[in-house]
Image 1: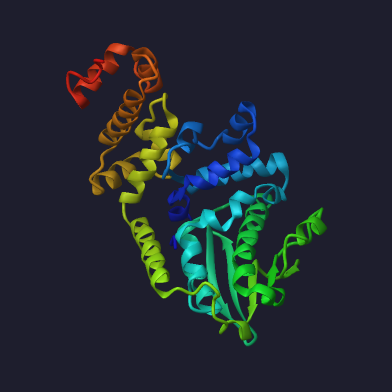
Image 2: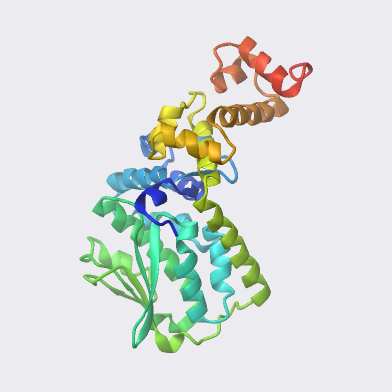
Length: 336
């Protein structure tokens, strides 16, 4: 779990969330450009499998959507809160031995998959609760919208784990019912409570001992191992290098400089340079590596001219691009 807001805002988050949001709300080029304004995300980056971005970019995207579509937009974007988008977290939660174990997994690793939230497991005399709060600064409307998406995902997981007993659980929101609350409540099989003390998923303690219908010790162990592997790099500078690579790729054909990169990840240029050096990934080689791999892909596809490829990578002319390709791939790289 990120230790501070500054850690969380720089934490890498899967681009799959942003990809799903843009597909849901960006049906035209103009709509996509409006959604991505101020995010430092380029559409091309969203099409790259395994891409990551800083949490700050995803928060700006969520704020843009909330301003345009209102706080209930998650009801129109089921792909964003679907269980399939949660990867190893979904597997680890489902395959846990019991409901109590599943809640433990969600509290421990929820921020690993979604570093824009913090989770805390609470036990009362009557229930087991996951309390969820924002890990980064968001305006109230954006947080309410993000919390709605999170609650829909929580419900999607536990309606299958608890089956008919889901009606004994409760989702609690610390704000008044929004306009259209009837439309919202119809999406839940559990209880829904507004004006609560916190954003909480509450499960009666008596249900904690129920076995998960999907319990699988071997698969559970592998999913936990995968989550721990994701969690570990967040504490070192290697994660920052991956974020900077994603930002460089997202800005093409514009060339991202060190100053702009530092601003986007919320640090100073001096600190950025130091932390990249600690990771063994200075800025200049990172930039060169992104350009090289993008060039390799375009050359393999063979659908663009040298001038078009040079422009796509931010080179001033085809000669400069050809010179870079010879350095990367040898003399025969542009022959064919």
